[in-house]
Image (cartoon, rainbow, N blue to C red):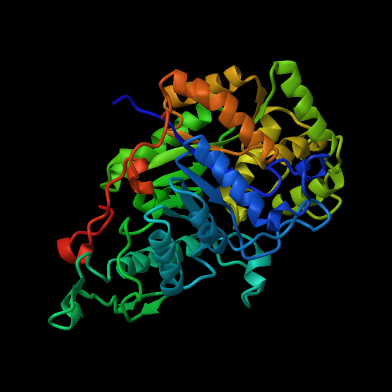
Length: 446
């Protein structure tokens, strides 16, 4: 069968454009409205998307003045969406820096069981001092330390998900034996960051364990992805950069002893779709005109580790900026933003507008045909296995993509016409169900 795209719907309150909430049709309270998310999930499922995704972090994002702030806890929300959908995968972000392996492994196992095998985990290490201070720390742990902790976290989580063999439950009513204690395998883990003794109190799930997703593109992030990830969300501004990232990650995955086809690379794209290119540009312009530059200026100075008042809206970035080595959080996003500003000689005002639309992800305004052309080209030229679709405005942007772009991708043989027989999220991504390491004696991802 010819290779086909994987499409993931990245859902964010009223849309990914920071000014989307100001449009007349937008609901400023959508970020805490379950019905809003049910509608979005069903639109994406109508388009036969592989999965939907919720970002998250253990801190209040932005200032409450800028855009709808705060978010429902994603595993709670996805459990509700599991009952409102049948096929679409459900991916939640959760931090390895501010969780414990036992509780988080249990939550994802529960979601996988409730959804009948549709759970996915976007693994983040969580940058930023704001989050650290919410957990009693004075500053965020060093970048390398966060990834070392994440690696041990994943190893322990897999031990927990494998702590029940698939056939542990025998349910022998006549003999009075519900399960086989010999098929329970407590981790008894003693490591640098964690001590976990007992087996998980949830049976092994339909997928074995959830689809493992990762979004870091730094050197540490790529090493981690090569070892663990099965899908990678990435931000790339150019086809050349995307091809380079794709080839590098596939090579690293092979070097780690894994099948490169078992990690799917999905760049983010923020499509603004119009019936003509001029209409799409007008829609984009309306959104950009609703940005309050002062909000973006404050956030940009924080991201670039600059003192307040350093940047001028109508000037380019200063020549002297901190090096990537001096940045402990969001290293890859820092580099992407600085390179974007330098490459296109953007003023700070114009850079804020670009980031307001996609926070460093590729933004594209055009007709349905032009959007489909761009997606198809990146897919064909070794830059992507699929895309993280990030509509600028929700729900209208997702509806337009499903109704106008998806049919073009189907007509070109790039995307499925329908879901077909019920599948787990892993099966939809073309991935095997991991063997239980206690049965095979082989680490589950190798």
